[in-house]
Length: 180
Image 1: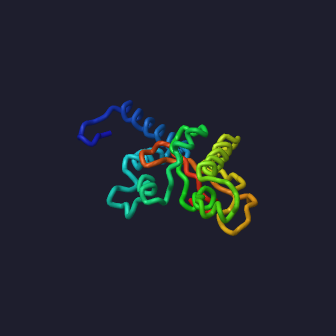
Image 2 (image 1 turned 120 degrees about the horizontal axis):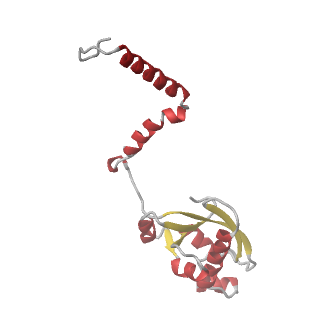
């Protein structure tokens, strides 16, 4: 047999090359589709899915706190036992925490924002410590609603979610169940 360089191979060398080729073909047939595509997936991992020019808009957690969309409650949360930064959405704050003298006079009950915040943060902490998996937990608590004249506590559901923050370290957000 003559090689690509024009030199002649011995019959032994040719038979060895044919056997090696047959062996390689058998290995390829035995590979699962996942193994066969692993090389392609490794090559795909080298290229980023998106680049900076692909991003249309981004809104960081720091911007949300600065804009008032989120309220940073990390200090109170640390007292409750949280070890990561915690924020609450403006909607959850308005429903479960916000309280002022006008509301107190109308409701004829003694409450304050720090006590209501503690109730929310503590119940979120208890929900996070409960057994189970997942990044999001729903929990319930009783609070006196701001609206109306009644001062009976009503049950409300909130969600607590853990995820990556702006610097990719874990952060917790307390929100209403319909928020994300």
